[in-house]
Image 1: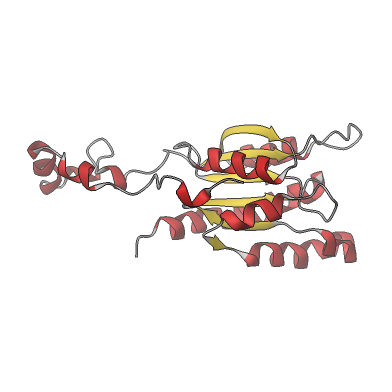
Image 2 (image 1 turned 45 degrees about the horizontal axis):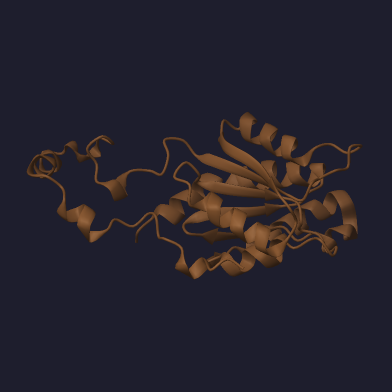
Length: 206
């Protein structure tokens, strides 16, 4: 299992970084030029110029007759003007999922992670169990809103769907269902509708 408590905190500025600013940098800041990203302090700079979203498929998704949920998710992101920072596939296993998430959230170009698959109730559906222990803050409203909204499309079957979300090292992580229509709905109707405000809240130091 990943020792997530030992992970580096990537976004905090260390005391050493604060002490190594030159006199010129201090002068520039006092003259009001610190708003320039090139001269801003490290902790004032965004993790990336645009919102970078990483898409992680959980399991092989080998149903060749069904639409590819990852392709559907990426289409939704592209349609909303989001930057896909990368995508990968990881086997549906507790340790494998935790290791992959730990690696992805540490990337400086990743602001949001979407996992696709493994949110059902089958024996191999371990995404929720793997990711929840890593979250510093849970967002139960994500799954609640999905089930209330998606019930209109699939009826009582929605009770076996367990989309989950939380914050890991200041990175929102959304666990999206592995069925294409459900994935499309989740990303288009919930994630993208709330993402900008969520990122602002996460970045707010107050």
